[in-house]
View (cartoon, rainbow, N blue to C red):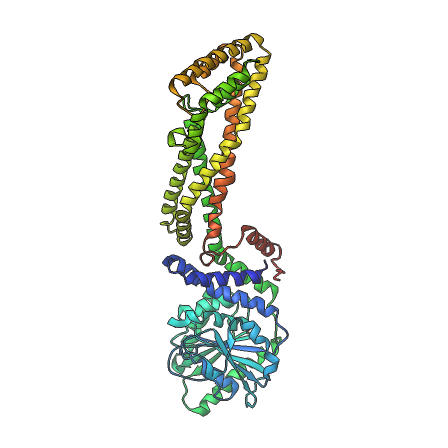
Length: 579
């Protein structure tokens, strides 16, 4: 992404955001403040890419300052419409002075997406237009050039056509600022002059409607204000008294032309903004333009921290309520159940296994036909799902708190909260499915723990034979109980007496410490498997939610792209690479 693309992207997203109803007044104010400097910088970069072109003289000024009158004086005829009504001109008007229109076709690209329309077709309710007109026959001393009459910058409606005004100002090879005695001290005037300063345009100031008795005081006040707001020397001044007689007006026009001629001689036609001036403008306003982008990055970072913290808390709950719980931890019992199978006495294993399958077949068939109830679920899965539900509830509360804070992009958090609420049911369902698959996928490690214990037992024949004897007697007692009661559960291989007997044997034998190490290793691997489940499945799902926010509510500039642009600015303070 280069700077020009970045500006276009920011402008597009800013406009989209302003159309959304959920923005707070603070956000709207910040977005509005970005527009003038952003539009000026973007248009300045576009001007650098233009072909050589005739000089562009741009007349700027606040409402009722007399801009159109000055344009007419420059052209030597009544070309621009003049009205006593404020805000009469709402579109840029370009007058081709002794120029043919086919030499300025590039204006359509420069003003895009604004459309060029004939003067009589300009709408009063739309501002994305501009117009041009050829002035072939003129008595003016101006050389071939384009003179632009522009909308005001201080009326109530000015925000609607501010971007076209900035485009036209950036196009200027010479700026002519027209201010009246009533308007020269307005803050809007000096805000504009301060904004334009980095581009270092040649400028002429026309102080209009001046009373000769107050002229000295007015000039002194103007120069003092200039020194307070700008760092460059004050530009040439043309003082225009209030006139109503056409002949007197013509004389004032000659005075303006006389003041302009030296500036025109020094001016390079179709000049491109110097690299250092564009760089200076960008550096001044960079923090303002990127503030909402950084706010999004900070919101995403904060969301990532919230997700990581709550899932870490869920893992701690799982550790406390399952892995470290002396009663609830069942995984070692699953491993010992596998060990019971490995302890079958040679010769008795096959008939006893067959006898168990025959006796318990009706029960196993019945359990296959009916769904498992809550009481038959793994205790591990119950703890795991409960800890995750707690974490998801904590996240919802954090989202509700964040969306109320004024120092954050509240609309971003509000949109994320809505997405989260909509996706919560599916997130829970998906995690239950993922947890079930994890439970099944971890079974080989349970079996591996059982084989590890069995291999160690084979090195201790006395203990192994004793366990096998206990296993046979436990099976006999269990099978007798099944014959008498018809069976009470779906697990026909693991009976409580056998489990208790083997646990006692293992704990009291020389294998006790080894079994503790096996149990500790099993817990460690189980915790890592659950941590991976939370990070790779649940955390990934939650961190993907910001990317699903409506694109109209976010600027969506990657942090890497922003860093690369800032590196360009930093490395080329005196020769910025713009394209």
